[in-house]
Amino acid sequence: MIKRKLHLFILLAAIFALLVGCGPKGVEDVVGDLDKRMEKMTGYKMNAVLTLQTGKDPQSYNVEVWHKKPDNYRVALTSEERDITQIILRNEEGVFVLTPHLKKSFRFQSGWPENHGQVYLYESLIKSILDDDARVFSQVDGKYIFEVKADYQNRSLDTQKVWLNEDLSPVRVEVMDTNKNVMVGVDFTNFELDSKFDEDSFNKEKNMETSMLLQSIPTLGGVEKEAPAGSFGVIQPSYMPQGVSLTSVEKVKGQEGSQIVLRYKGDFNYTLFEERPKAATVTLPMGEIVDLDGTMAVLTGDQKKTLTWTYNGVEYLLTGDMPKEEMIAVAKSTFDQVGK
Image (cartoon, rainbow, N blue to C red; front, top):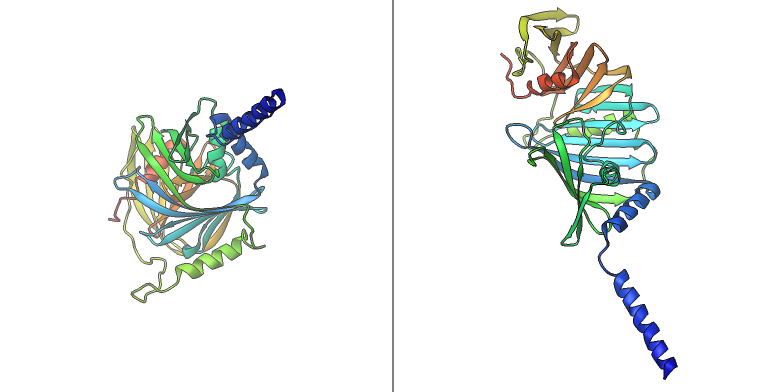
């Protein structure tokens, strides 16, 4: 009888342990699994839709991310509205910002993406969860949900909510400002862990050629997309820092075409150059990638800074003694302007 009771007790204990093991995971279990995922994964391929609520109207971009450990990255951001793709590429040669349809690229040394998190990078999302000891965790409909601090270039973005499947693949991210308004949303449509890559997947020339080919496919109207040509007028930023005034607007004739030059003076002194972009590879000793709400820019310099970006077929170069945040505000305020 004692032996029978002992067997029954052992059986019940085993069943209880099994039931406990099959129960929902707690926050420490999920965080531990994420830590192991970061350590063991060799890379991934991922697709997502990025939606920005930072302007007058929502702006959406298709995002394709390839990552091969330790340092190879390819991030392609495509605006269907403007039918334009920009690529951020990192390989053993450095970091590149490619604008294939303009045959333009910037190459420089940079800490990207380590210097700031990127909302469309899987490891950035995991790191934000692991680093925030005050993380808030919940489980809804088979999804793990974390609310954690946001660490992005835009300091007005305060917190973010991250949805993960039970296999730890990403589902959605919402990045909020200090008033809990959702300013950035990412919906992940595909995720492939430990992907295999071709030998030239992160090669700069290969990515330029492939993207140019894709963007030259005839449209339904039968017309190939080409870089805009001709005059675009004067595009004047709608934002100007306090204590600053516009002192002159000139049209300068150069060897390779005309250039618009706007000069500002006051508490900050800066100059904005506008021209049609020319095919070139620009090599810089150092630089930082700045996200102008889906349009990639390159920032260089220390005391005197230079910010370069392309939008709607116009290349802008903003240079002066102003803070980075002010330069970004000026740059973004050119987006809704029409040449005069």
